[in-house]
Image (cartoon, rainbow, N blue to C red):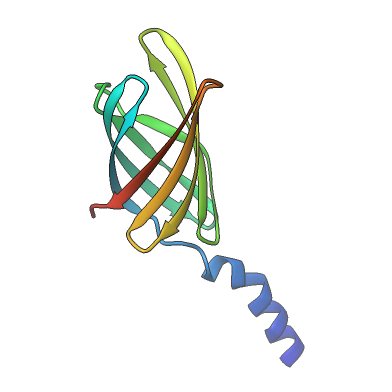
Length: 120
């Protein structure tokens, strides 16, 4: 019986240690095209991250794709259309309390660093 309890604990341990990122996060940072402000709204289901990203240059929020949470690390993809050009923006971040430190790859031509802060 103890063995079964230990196996169950080990099986669910990764889920218990996941960062709490559900909610609204904001960031303002400098990019190659100027300062941008973002609002990220995240939802979590197990290790799957879903939600939206909205930047100050766009009227519409975009759905985030391929979102994952592993411990205090999160990652997702934002498929953005900027001035008629499709851009794939890949995010990788580390959660520390009410901040997420992100590195994002904008297509194949820019790497940007930003910090998102929990707003709700």
